[in-house]
Image 1 (cartoon, rainbow, N blue to C red):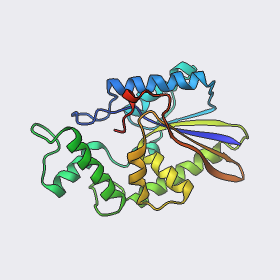
Image 2 (image 1 turned 120 degrees about the vertical axis):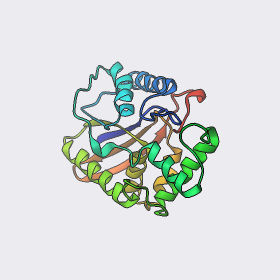
Image 3 (image 1 turned 135 degrees about the horizontal axis):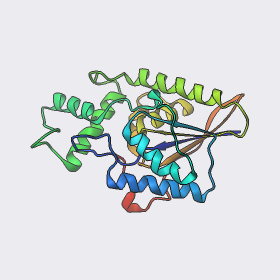
Image 4 (image 1 turned 90 degrees about the horizontal axis):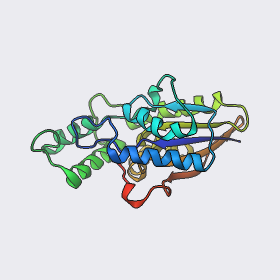
Length: 225
């Protein structure tokens, strides 16, 4: 059997003008991932990295300790379904509140509206401009999953992909046969820097081994944004 590990990026800069960067906490989470993988003696035959800075920087801090200096092309299908600013703009338009810029709602209230907009998207209750439907997004992720596992058809291969919560949630929904609406709830559960593991073979579809493992992170580093 071969192994596929999905690593969610470290904490991004939610609420900042530029979301797509690691916070200080996100960098520390990524470094802890690297220490954990090194301690476990993990080695990878194939590395996939999403297209965002938060994916690339997470990979640098988490895979560097394993001697992996990734120089490949980013994989666009490992991108999140939407950027934070798009989700906040959609919530602003629907609710008539300010969630961006000076005077915006901040902190837990902003995070709540953000999560609610993701749920509305996952349940196909809102169309966010420039953002695929949950069904279309899931199909894109499913095609990547099929490609990634078929390209690694030698037994005993080990793959890691650094990506975002929506991609991981879509893989979970695909593997477990869950409806599209489950993507939102799964996204809300996924810790930054967590690892989800699947096994597969040439004649066997991916099966879940573990989901959202972050036991190597102290409580102070457990975040979901």
